[in-house]
Length: 56
Image (cartoon, rainbow, N blue to C red; front, side, top):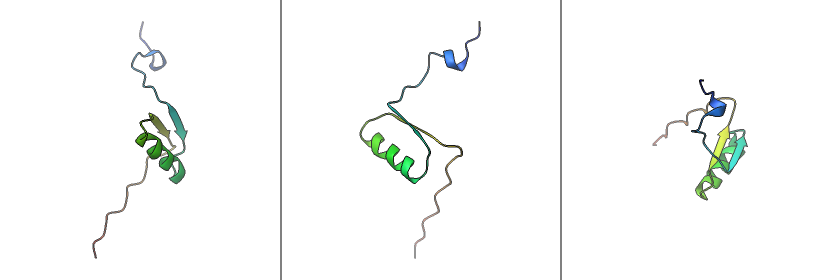
């Protein structure tokens, strides 16, 4: 019998799940991650790339 993803033994475990990767959600995820807390961040789209730095 083939196992489904929900039955897989290789599930990842997180301490905190954050829904919304805007400025607040991403900031909280970074802060918690720096404290050694395993965080999963969910958003409806991929993040936009950061603009290239300009040297003037």
